[in-house]
Length: 114
Length: 114
Picture (cartoon, helix red, strand yellow):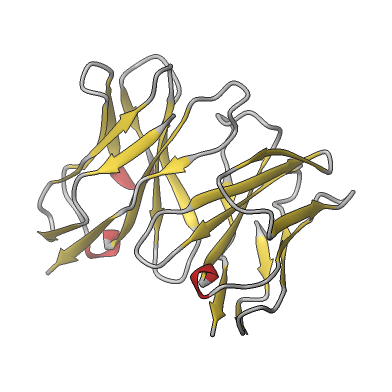
């Protein structure tokens, strides 16, 4: 079992550009969540996808958008990048929506915006 | 709104000493509580969780935590730490129901010295 995988591992972009991050959930999981972890901070919830729909969203602007595919994999898109978007982006998966089901995290994508 | 405060940003201890990492939460409803560990350059791994029932929860790697509703706390303890326990520890809360997100604290860096 490969667990949650994310690509790419690292990414460097410049202000104003757009970026797409990818996530494959753990085998058997159908729910994917995305978190942003700034340096020295805890992860912050961006949004969660289930059945290809965004089910809940955190306090992030519309520049952050996502998608879930029929195979449950997911993408996070960020438009008009700002310096403050530099962070580790974590993907997590679980079976179903219930928060009491264990959530497994990927290793993250480190995004640097110059 | 749910929130988490981790009272110590860094906790240095000697190997084989006991340790307690403190976590307080705020919520207007019943909550689920979690502790995660993050090793360098890795994603988060679940240590333990409180959903209901016994207030003393045992997790992996010899860690345990106690839920105290009157104090709104969920402190993490280990009676004897090892060098390999050096990592960042995050406390998280969720109100459950239709609220699917986890809200994390800022983390506590546990450093175990020989």
